[in-house]
Each structure stands twice: as C-alpha cells, then as structure tokens.
Length: 226
Image (cartoon, rainbow, N blue to C red):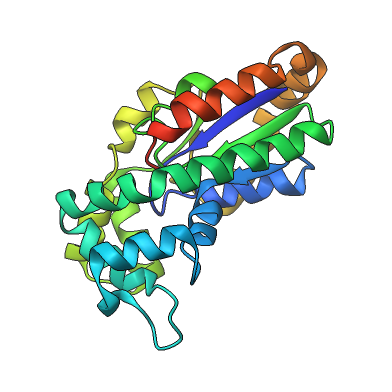
C-alpha cells in the first residue's frame, strides 16, 4: 500500500485536488473530517476542549462553535498548541483506523490529506508528497472572499501554517493553483496519468500492516492536524 501525502495551505485549493482524487477512484483520508468527528458533542475530544476553553465556545445545541474556537486559537499560538495537544491522540487514532479500513479493503493507493503534514512530521510516512501552491496575495484574497472575513483574521489563519513557499520546497509534486479551475484540472490530469497509475502498479510492495501500525503508535500520536 502506498500513502500519498496531500497538503497545501488554507484557501490554496487543496480540497479541490482532494475531491479530484476521490472522483478518480482514489480513496482519501481527510484529517479535517477526522478532526470534526473528534469534536462532536459528548466525545472525549469535546470534553477536553470544553474543559480547557470553557462553555463560551459552544453553540446553543452543545456542539463546538468551530469558527469561534478558530478565532481564539489562530490569534494565540499558545492556545493553538493547547488545542493541538488535546486533540492529537484522538485525531491520530481516527486517521489510523481510516487507513486500516482502506488497507483491509485492498486499496493499493491512499491519499492522506493533512493541512499540517510537515508540521505534524507525517511527511516521512507519505510518498510522493503533493503540495497545492498559490502565491500569498492570491491566497489572502481567496480566503477573505471565501469566508467573508477580515484581512487581519485571514492573515492570522494563514500565518498559523508554514508558508506555502517553504512547503513547495519539500514537495515531490507541486500543483500551481494560481490560475483557473480548468488549469488546475489539467495539472491534475497530467499528474494522475503519470504518477498515480505508476504507484498503483507497484504499491503492493510498499507498506505492510506492521508499518501502518508503527505509524499510528509512534508518529501519529505526536502530530498536529487541525
């Protein structure tokens, strides 16, 4: 089994590329979706986060107000570290089980979509690493337009991640998303036809169950994913 790393920055277009993989029949383990699950009302992650940040972060129905929590942690690095530390064990476990289920179903190639792939040191478990890149000004403009947020809030969220210019230096494959959606689709088609099909043909020798288990026990538990 081969685990392909997919990362980028907020508003870079990573989710669009993730959806293109899904549409092509390649399963995706999305760390953001796992993070949402571990914050659902009544879960262990929910209890720890509410205890640490107070009930002011809750909506009327008891679910976590994610935009409100985001404003708190993206403007305060210390609080962001607290959140990462609280949720990392739950998220790592969720990612592990999603990978395991796909491995047991016989999938040869899995895409691991993690916004903080390098920050969480999960890049060493993925090959190749795909970075969806966009220039800083376009990233800022897209984030402000997408979330109807202020430039200050958008910059705080962007600055909470490694710069995309640094991430692209660590990538095996860079997808430049400064152009149109059709440009992005064309880059994906070329990359898929060359890279993913080759991986599918030789992935069965890449990773064993023991390696997947080791990834969960050692590295995933130390990571930061949201």
